[in-house]
Amino acid sequence: MKVDRSFMIEAGNRAVLLLHGFAGTTSDMRELGEYIAENGYTVYAPNYRGHGENPENFLATTPEMWYEDAVNGYKKLQDAGYHEIVILGVAMGGVFALKMAQKFAPKAIIPLCANVNRNMRYIPVEAYLKKQLKADGIVETEADDMLASYQSEIEKMATARAAFYKEVSGQIEKIHVPTMIGQGCQDEEIDADNANYIFKKIHTDEKQLCFYAGSGHDIVNDCEKDILGEDVVYFLDDLNWVSEAAV
Image (spheres, rainbow, N blue to C red):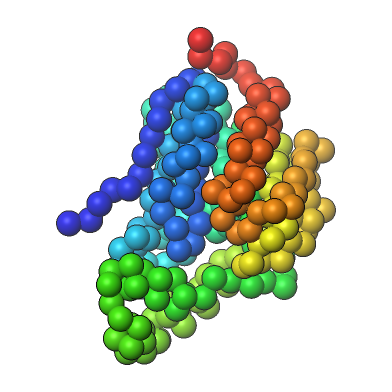
C-alpha cells in the first residue's frame, strides 16, 4: 500500500507551499515547514508520485506528473480558502516554483538551489535509485543488475527531466512576482551560478539573492538551516500581504 507522505500544518491565514526536490520526499521539508508554521504561516507539502517508492514505481512516473502534483498542492491550498500563497521549492521543487510563477499568480516564490542555467548538472537517476536500494538492504551487485534491467527507463527519465528544466529556463523572464533566491555555495549537484542566472533573468524589482557559504545542495537541512529559516520568515513577513496575520 502506498503511503501518503504529504503534510499540512495550519497556523495562519497566509500559506506557503513547500516543494521537495528530485530524489527527495516531504520529510526533507519537515523541519523548515515546522519553523515557518511556528511563525504564523500555514504550510502544505505534497509528495510527488514515485518518490520514496521502489524503482519500478518511481520509473513509471515523469516530471510532468511530479509538476502536476505540485500544482495540485497549490490548488489544495486555494480550495481550503487560502488566497495568498508563497511557493518555496528546493532544487527541482525550485524549478517547479519558477514554472508555477509563470502560469499562476502566487504571492511570491522562493527557489532554493534551483538548477535552470544552460550549463546544467543533475543528480543522476542511477545514483538516486542505488541509494534507495541500499536503504532497502539490497547488496550492491544485486542493485547493479537490477538497474541494468531498467536502463531504458532511466535514460528516458533523465532526458525528460533535462527537457523540462530547459523549458522552464527559457521562460524565466515571464516571472513578475517577488522572489527570494537561495543558493548553497558548497552545492555538489549544481553550479552556484544558477542563482545568478535566475536573478538576472527574472522580471521583478522585488528580488533578493542569498548565498549560504557553508551549505550544499540539501540547503534546508545543512549547517546554515537556521539562518536560512530566519531569512525565509523575514522575506515572508516583509511581503505586502492583504490578509491579516493570524493572532
